[in-house]
Length: 364
Image (tube, rainbow, N blue to C red; front, side, top):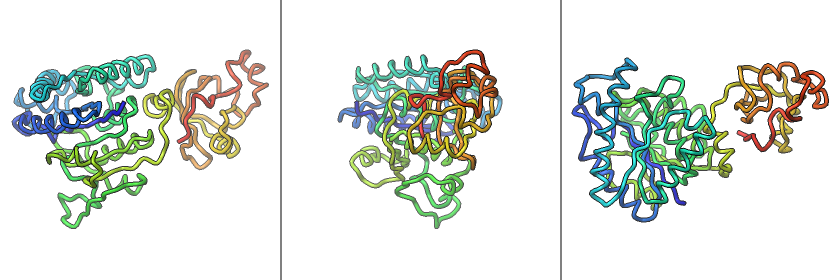
């Protein structure tokens, strides 16, 4: 299935008067045209809080979490109805899908959400996805819908993620402050220097600026997904991107796609700990494709249970792998540095010779 994920930010479809119906209609027209050419299309859209804020006559960014959730509840119905009407004008059906972070971190919920979305796409429905702000708590929040869009794209093995911004793409400096700033058309590698360049505040309607978009691009390209950041206020750019024209900023993918399970490990489940490895273990994982044994672990951090995800880091602190552990942090404390034939002697039992099996690990 040729899946395309399009992320639409609050600043694109809202203003101080609430939802910008004209802009929503224009975007629906462009997206419907792509959908009609055979692209299974998913829209990740912000805007519920901004729409609710306008309906409740609240000015400025909402800081109180309860008030924000109330605004989201008020605004979400208006947001979906605006899309329903706009896409309906082109004979397209839409579906509202609200997600929280645990839909990605818990394997069963992840599979269920994925199957539901795939079924909708197979029925030619365009899912309109948003974070469930009304019930989300800090521990379950994505932070911004750029990250949510990257997770959805990864979940569906999308070929491309297009993030609509209020600027033309990634610049060498903030174009609103420096008229000498130049657009960067192509990014092959997202470096720490590039991340530092992108840091900045978002608009009053949104939670993320260019930095959050860059982090989302980094997540998606690591899954083999091409990412484009383009100006969401200009028409016909979506078709231009898919036709190969250089518009905005394109982030190239240089890695092969993971299998579905490893994709979930890579981007879905959160890490709850860190294992520091010696040089021999790093070489065994990266160069020899081996599983992680307790003998290669030097130290650990965090509180985790069997089946949780942890990062593996090299002696210089660089993350080199992520995987699902076969032992809790308390169990590992007693066996790090030991040979596999010593595990049962120390613990009184043995789940596995491997702390992380190769099948449950991704190399970063």
